[in-house]
Length: 247
Image (cartoon, rainbow, N blue to C red; front, top):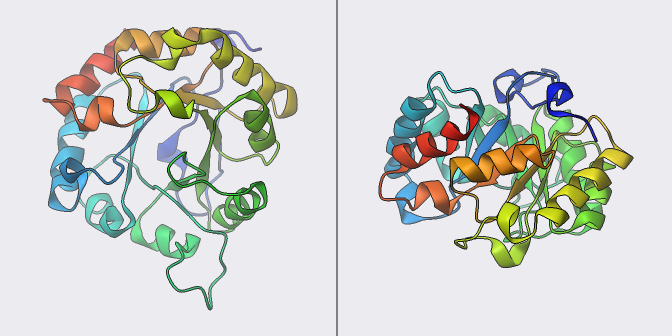
């Protein structure tokens, strides 16, 4: 496992179409998943992102948001934070009604997409195809996983990132870094054995600056979170609190 001084973090600002899919930079990656909460839908998604952008200004992290497909163009065109999709299919242009086409996501302004979130599971073959299609469209990918074995399998596909999230802790009040730090470390090690250059995120219950510090100490390159920010009484304050873990 790499030490913190040698850790390679993802840089979502670099992830524009036809840009390199990964870079080694000195910042962790914080990806806020908006899911389909009322608080993060439509105009509320735009207002929320503007508030988070203010909180993230000058932070020692690269912060991005994953919004609903219908909101990508609205949010990406009016805020400084990089915008990601929540799902991408492996379909190519042509027939495939209802599919989330990688090229369409890119044209709408997305920098990348989540793949295989616990709430949008795919087979390994589907994951591989989606990651490949995102690369073809010049987009990055964060492949979500649930245990060390699936983390290793995902890392072998060489996505932009892998994100380990135990499903039973998603949306809960206890961070995975507290509930089971050993499995976080094991997932990082599993990924690095297969693909040393693929950064690893962790998520599920992550909310606080201490949670972020713990994730980095366990070898992660950042965090993926949702309700801890989006459902907070003051999302901007919640994000600022999370980012305080880097000070």
